Figure: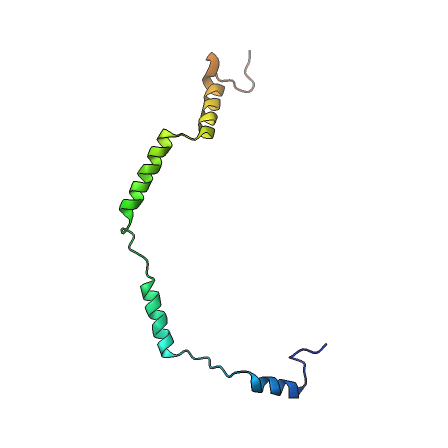
Length: 97
């Protein structure tokens, strides 16, 4: 099976002749444009949105207090019943009657 790497020298010469010549250097204007873009993309300061973050956390906490998660509430109720529900003492393995 022939590939471009094992093709005849004439094919490789023709292929090299039609391929565009590229240089490995980067134009200075492109470098400056990349630096301007990187500078423009700098992050906002950490304190820029702290008021909004605090307000969002307070709203989420208020919503959680008003509407507790039913799964967590049922787990808490089951654990409470297991350990002290129905006037029972906590059962332990190998208790002597």
